[in-house]
Length: 127
Ligand code: FES
Image (tube, rainbow, N blue to C red; front, side):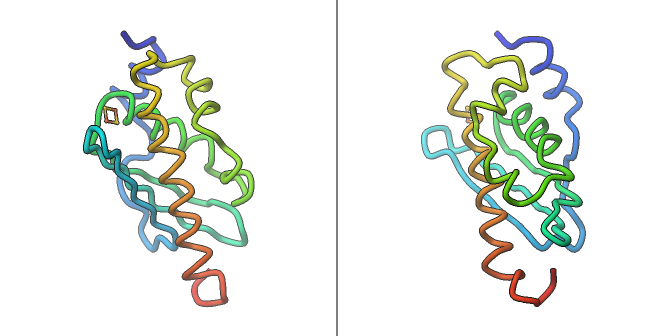
Protein backbone atom coordinates (compact mmCIF):
# COMPACT_ATOMS: atom_id res chain seq x y z
CA UNK A 1 0.00 0.00 0.00
CA UNK A 2 2.81 2.45 0.87
CA UNK A 3 5.95 3.06 -1.18
CA UNK A 4 9.43 2.47 0.21
CA UNK A 5 10.07 6.08 1.14
CA UNK A 6 6.83 6.34 3.12
CA UNK A 7 7.68 3.11 4.96
CA UNK A 8 11.18 4.39 5.75
CA UNK A 9 9.84 7.65 7.20
CA UNK A 10 7.23 5.73 9.18
CA UNK A 11 9.60 3.12 10.59
CA UNK A 12 12.40 5.55 11.47
CA UNK A 13 10.92 9.04 11.50
CA UNK A 14 13.06 12.13 11.98
CA UNK A 15 12.47 14.93 14.47
CA UNK A 16 10.18 13.06 16.86
CA UNK A 17 9.50 14.70 20.21
CA UNK A 18 9.16 18.18 21.58
CA UNK A 19 11.48 21.14 21.10
CA UNK A 20 12.79 22.46 24.40
CA UNK A 21 12.15 26.20 24.76
CA UNK A 22 9.77 26.10 21.83
CA UNK A 23 8.28 29.43 20.86
CA UNK A 24 5.82 28.02 18.32
CA UNK A 25 3.42 25.18 19.02
CA UNK A 26 0.61 23.97 16.79
CA UNK A 27 -1.77 21.09 17.18
CA UNK A 28 -4.39 19.91 14.73
CA UNK A 29 -6.76 16.99 14.63
CA UNK A 30 -8.47 15.13 11.85
CA UNK A 31 -12.17 15.07 12.59
CA UNK A 32 -12.86 11.96 10.51
CA UNK A 33 -10.28 9.60 12.04
CA UNK A 34 -9.53 11.35 15.34
CA UNK A 35 -5.78 11.45 14.76
CA UNK A 36 -3.76 14.32 16.20
CA UNK A 37 -0.49 15.99 15.23
CA UNK A 38 1.49 18.41 17.34
CA UNK A 39 4.46 20.40 16.04
CA UNK A 40 6.78 22.49 18.17
CA UNK A 41 9.45 24.85 16.85
CA UNK A 42 12.14 27.21 17.98
CA UNK A 43 12.11 30.20 15.64
CA UNK A 44 15.04 32.62 15.75
CA UNK A 45 15.22 35.72 13.56
CA UNK A 46 12.45 34.39 11.34
CA UNK A 47 14.22 31.06 10.72
CA UNK A 48 12.93 27.70 11.94
CA UNK A 49 16.01 26.55 13.82
CA UNK A 50 14.44 23.49 15.43
CA UNK A 51 11.27 21.55 14.77
CA UNK A 52 9.85 18.34 16.21
CA UNK A 53 6.55 16.53 16.02
CA UNK A 54 4.37 14.15 17.96
CA UNK A 55 1.74 12.30 15.98
CA UNK A 56 -0.96 10.03 17.27
CA UNK A 57 -2.04 8.66 13.96
CA UNK A 58 -1.60 6.31 11.06
CA UNK A 59 1.56 5.46 9.12
CA UNK A 60 0.82 8.15 6.53
CA UNK A 61 0.42 10.76 9.25
CA UNK A 62 3.75 9.81 10.84
CA UNK A 63 5.55 9.74 7.47
CA UNK A 64 4.15 13.11 6.38
CA UNK A 65 5.02 14.66 9.75
CA UNK A 66 8.57 13.40 9.53
CA UNK A 67 9.18 14.59 5.98
CA UNK A 68 7.42 17.91 6.59
CA UNK A 69 9.67 18.71 9.56
CA UNK A 70 12.71 17.98 7.39
CA UNK A 71 11.34 20.22 4.63
CA UNK A 72 10.89 23.23 6.92
CA UNK A 73 13.94 22.98 9.15
CA UNK A 74 16.25 25.91 8.42
CA UNK A 75 13.61 27.64 6.31
CA UNK A 76 12.07 31.06 6.86
CA UNK A 77 8.57 31.39 8.27
CA UNK A 78 7.28 32.48 4.86
CA UNK A 79 8.86 29.51 3.11
CA UNK A 80 7.34 27.13 5.66
CA UNK A 81 3.92 28.75 5.32
CA UNK A 82 4.07 28.28 1.54
CA UNK A 83 4.51 24.49 1.79
CA UNK A 84 1.37 22.63 0.80
CA UNK A 85 0.23 19.13 1.59
CA UNK A 86 0.64 18.28 -2.13
CA UNK A 87 4.34 19.17 -1.90
CA UNK A 88 4.68 17.00 1.20
CA UNK A 89 3.03 14.10 -0.64
CA UNK A 90 5.31 14.65 -3.68
CA UNK A 91 8.36 14.64 -1.42
CA UNK A 92 7.24 11.25 -0.14
CA UNK A 93 6.84 9.94 -3.69
CA UNK A 94 3.07 9.76 -3.36
CA UNK A 95 0.47 8.33 -1.00
CA UNK A 96 -2.50 6.06 -1.67
CA UNK A 97 -5.54 8.17 -2.60
CA UNK A 98 -7.40 7.27 0.58
CA UNK A 99 -4.43 8.51 2.63
CA UNK A 100 -4.04 11.97 1.08
CA UNK A 101 -6.16 13.50 3.84
CA UNK A 102 -3.53 12.41 6.38
CA UNK A 103 -0.98 14.75 4.78
CA UNK A 104 -3.24 17.71 5.48
CA UNK A 105 -2.43 17.33 9.18
CA UNK A 106 1.24 18.26 8.65
CA UNK A 107 0.43 21.38 6.66
CA UNK A 108 -2.19 22.38 9.23
CA UNK A 109 0.12 21.83 12.21
CA UNK A 110 2.92 23.87 10.62
CA UNK A 111 0.54 26.74 9.92
CA UNK A 112 -0.94 26.54 13.42
CA UNK A 113 2.52 26.63 15.03
CA UNK A 114 3.63 29.65 13.02
CA UNK A 115 0.36 31.42 13.78
CA UNK A 116 0.97 30.72 17.47
CA UNK A 117 4.47 32.20 17.17
CA UNK A 118 3.28 35.31 15.34
CA UNK A 119 0.53 35.89 17.89
CA UNK A 120 2.50 35.27 21.05
CA UNK A 121 6.17 35.86 20.58
CA UNK A 122 6.93 38.06 17.64
CA UNK A 123 6.22 41.29 19.44
CA UNK A 124 9.63 41.22 21.13
CA UNK A 125 8.69 38.86 23.94
CA UNK A 126 10.76 35.84 23.35
CA UNK A 127 11.92 35.57 19.79
FE1 FES B 1 -5.96 9.56 10.49
FE2 FES B 1 -4.28 8.97 8.60
S1 FES B 1 -6.04 7.86 9.13
S2 FES B 1 -4.31 10.73 9.84
